[in-house]
Image (cartoon, rainbow, N blue to C red; front, side, top):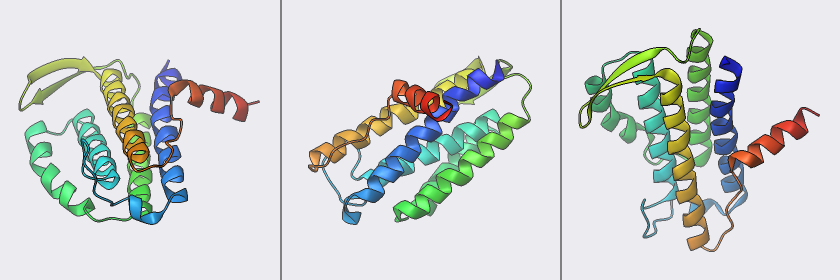
Length: 172
Protein backbone atom coordinates (compact mmCIF):
# COMPACT_ATOMS: atom_id res chain seq x y z
CA UNK A 1 0.00 0.00 0.00
CA UNK A 2 2.86 2.39 0.76
CA UNK A 3 3.89 2.48 -2.92
CA UNK A 4 0.36 3.46 -3.95
CA UNK A 5 0.18 6.11 -1.24
CA UNK A 6 3.50 7.58 -2.32
CA UNK A 7 2.40 7.73 -5.95
CA UNK A 8 0.20 10.65 -4.94
CA UNK A 9 3.23 12.49 -3.55
CA UNK A 10 5.23 11.57 -6.66
CA UNK A 11 2.50 13.25 -8.69
CA UNK A 12 3.13 16.43 -6.65
CA UNK A 13 6.84 16.28 -7.53
CA UNK A 14 6.09 15.63 -11.20
CA UNK A 15 3.62 18.54 -11.38
CA UNK A 16 6.02 20.94 -9.66
CA UNK A 17 8.78 19.93 -12.07
CA UNK A 18 6.45 20.55 -15.02
CA UNK A 19 5.80 24.05 -13.68
CA UNK A 20 9.53 24.75 -13.25
CA UNK A 21 10.35 23.44 -16.74
CA UNK A 22 7.57 25.49 -18.28
CA UNK A 23 8.53 28.68 -16.45
CA UNK A 24 12.17 28.34 -17.53
CA UNK A 25 10.98 28.23 -21.16
CA UNK A 26 9.17 31.56 -20.81
CA UNK A 27 10.71 35.05 -20.60
CA UNK A 28 12.76 35.34 -17.42
CA UNK A 29 11.10 38.54 -16.21
CA UNK A 30 7.66 36.97 -15.67
CA UNK A 31 8.81 34.97 -12.63
CA UNK A 32 9.08 38.05 -10.38
CA UNK A 33 6.71 40.31 -12.35
CA UNK A 34 4.11 41.87 -10.07
CA UNK A 35 0.49 41.52 -11.14
CA UNK A 36 -2.89 41.94 -9.49
CA UNK A 37 -3.92 38.45 -8.50
CA UNK A 38 -4.27 36.28 -5.40
CA UNK A 39 -0.46 36.48 -5.10
CA UNK A 40 1.60 39.43 -6.34
CA UNK A 41 3.92 37.25 -8.44
CA UNK A 42 4.57 33.70 -9.55
CA UNK A 43 7.68 33.69 -7.36
CA UNK A 44 5.45 34.36 -4.35
CA UNK A 45 3.21 31.41 -5.22
CA UNK A 46 6.15 29.04 -5.47
CA UNK A 47 7.56 30.45 -2.24
CA UNK A 48 4.23 29.79 -0.55
CA UNK A 49 4.07 26.21 -1.82
CA UNK A 50 7.65 25.60 -0.69
CA UNK A 51 7.12 27.10 2.77
CA UNK A 52 3.89 25.16 3.28
CA UNK A 53 5.43 21.86 2.15
CA UNK A 54 8.31 22.50 4.56
CA UNK A 55 5.93 23.20 7.43
CA UNK A 56 3.90 20.04 6.85
CA UNK A 57 7.00 17.87 6.61
CA UNK A 58 8.01 19.27 10.00
CA UNK A 59 4.54 18.52 11.39
CA UNK A 60 4.66 14.95 10.03
CA UNK A 61 8.11 14.58 11.56
CA UNK A 62 6.69 15.40 14.99
CA UNK A 63 7.91 18.96 15.51
CA UNK A 64 5.83 21.36 17.59
CA UNK A 65 3.46 23.34 15.36
CA UNK A 66 3.88 26.59 17.31
CA UNK A 67 7.65 26.48 16.81
CA UNK A 68 7.19 25.63 13.13
CA UNK A 69 4.87 28.58 12.56
CA UNK A 70 7.32 30.91 14.31
CA UNK A 71 10.09 29.78 11.95
CA UNK A 72 7.83 30.29 8.91
CA UNK A 73 8.54 34.02 8.71
CA UNK A 74 12.29 33.36 8.70
CA UNK A 75 11.82 30.70 6.03
CA UNK A 76 9.74 33.06 3.88
CA UNK A 77 12.41 35.78 4.20
CA UNK A 78 15.17 33.35 3.24
CA UNK A 79 13.50 32.51 -0.08
CA UNK A 80 12.49 36.05 -1.08
CA UNK A 81 14.11 37.17 -4.31
CA UNK A 82 15.48 33.73 -5.20
CA UNK A 83 15.68 32.91 -8.89
CA UNK A 84 13.61 30.18 -10.49
CA UNK A 85 16.72 27.98 -10.62
CA UNK A 86 17.45 28.53 -6.92
CA UNK A 87 13.84 27.68 -6.02
CA UNK A 88 13.98 24.57 -8.14
CA UNK A 89 17.01 23.39 -6.15
CA UNK A 90 15.21 24.13 -2.87
CA UNK A 91 12.20 22.10 -4.05
CA UNK A 92 14.50 19.25 -5.11
CA UNK A 93 16.24 19.25 -1.72
CA UNK A 94 12.88 19.30 0.06
CA UNK A 95 11.67 16.36 -2.03
CA UNK A 96 14.75 14.43 -0.90
CA UNK A 97 13.83 15.22 2.71
CA UNK A 98 10.29 13.96 2.10
CA UNK A 99 11.66 10.76 0.50
CA UNK A 100 13.97 10.19 3.48
CA UNK A 101 11.00 10.69 5.79
CA UNK A 102 8.88 8.22 3.80
CA UNK A 103 11.72 5.67 3.77
CA UNK A 104 11.58 5.58 7.57
CA UNK A 105 7.81 5.11 7.74
CA UNK A 106 6.32 1.64 7.93
CA UNK A 107 2.73 2.81 7.94
CA UNK A 108 1.47 6.05 6.42
CA UNK A 109 -1.92 5.32 8.01
CA UNK A 110 -0.30 5.80 11.42
CA UNK A 111 -2.25 8.19 13.62
CA UNK A 112 -0.67 11.56 14.31
CA UNK A 113 -1.83 14.53 16.35
CA UNK A 114 -1.39 18.08 15.11
CA UNK A 115 -1.92 21.14 17.26
CA UNK A 116 -2.71 24.01 14.89
CA UNK A 117 -2.61 27.53 16.40
CA UNK A 118 -5.90 28.52 14.71
CA UNK A 119 -7.80 25.25 14.38
CA UNK A 120 -6.83 23.38 17.55
CA UNK A 121 -5.93 19.71 17.79
CA UNK A 122 -6.43 17.31 14.91
CA UNK A 123 -6.19 13.55 15.01
CA UNK A 124 -5.38 12.29 11.53
CA UNK A 125 -2.88 10.05 9.79
CA UNK A 126 0.27 10.70 7.83
CA UNK A 127 -1.29 9.91 4.48
CA UNK A 128 -4.05 12.48 5.00
CA UNK A 129 -1.35 15.09 5.63
CA UNK A 130 0.42 13.97 2.43
CA UNK A 131 -2.92 14.41 0.63
CA UNK A 132 -3.14 17.90 2.07
CA UNK A 133 0.35 18.78 0.80
CA UNK A 134 -0.52 17.50 -2.68
CA UNK A 135 -3.95 19.16 -2.81
CA UNK A 136 -2.48 22.44 -1.59
CA UNK A 137 0.15 22.31 -4.34
CA UNK A 138 -2.48 21.50 -6.96
CA UNK A 139 -4.57 24.48 -5.92
CA UNK A 140 -1.64 26.89 -6.15
CA UNK A 141 -0.30 25.47 -9.41
CA UNK A 142 -3.73 26.50 -10.68
CA UNK A 143 -2.99 30.03 -9.43
CA UNK A 144 0.23 29.97 -11.46
CA UNK A 145 -1.65 28.89 -14.58
CA UNK A 146 -4.17 31.71 -14.10
CA UNK A 147 -1.36 34.21 -13.59
CA UNK A 148 0.44 33.04 -16.71
CA UNK A 149 -2.73 33.40 -18.76
CA UNK A 150 -3.32 36.84 -17.28
CA UNK A 151 0.13 37.81 -18.59
CA UNK A 152 -0.61 36.33 -22.03
CA UNK A 153 1.30 33.04 -21.68
CA UNK A 154 -0.01 29.49 -21.78
CA UNK A 155 -0.13 27.30 -18.71
CA UNK A 156 1.08 23.74 -18.56
CA UNK A 157 -1.03 20.63 -17.95
CA UNK A 158 -0.40 19.29 -14.44
CA UNK A 159 -3.62 17.33 -13.91
CA UNK A 160 -3.30 14.03 -12.06
CA UNK A 161 -4.55 12.12 -15.10
CA UNK A 162 -1.74 13.66 -17.19
CA UNK A 163 0.69 12.29 -14.60
CA UNK A 164 -0.92 8.85 -14.85
CA UNK A 165 -0.52 8.89 -18.62
CA UNK A 166 3.08 10.08 -18.31
CA UNK A 167 4.12 7.35 -15.89
CA UNK A 168 2.32 4.66 -17.92
CA UNK A 169 4.12 5.79 -21.09
CA UNK A 170 7.49 5.91 -19.29
CA UNK A 171 6.92 2.42 -17.83
CA UNK A 172 6.00 0.90 -21.22
